[in-house]
Length: 112
Image (cartoon, rainbow, N blue to C red; front, side, top):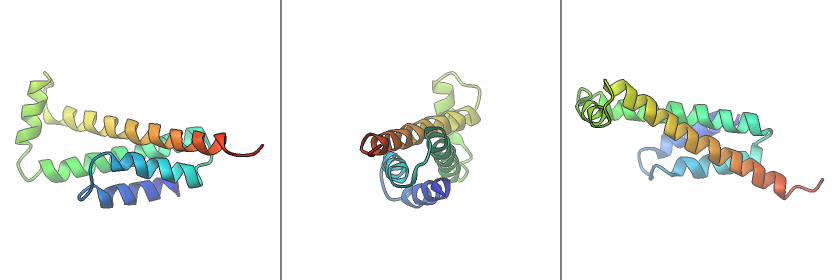
């Protein structure tokens, strides 16, 4: 369930809000419905990775990957696909770490 919530909210807000909104979405989702550290991190990581790759493709395909190719060459990467992978991994790390932080904050205030 957290995976779908993060995926849908991040995708819907990806067009209108800044990039860091995925951190807030992941944090709050894990804060309210997170269960374990491992599942919170990986569900948010995969959800945000998918969203960022799809959104990057939506912006890159219409211009035939010209900008992505130029950025890849700027970083000495062979092609635009590497930039897409790096983008997805960075977004996934932002989402995963935010979800993990949300779950750990939840645990810090739980009574044992």
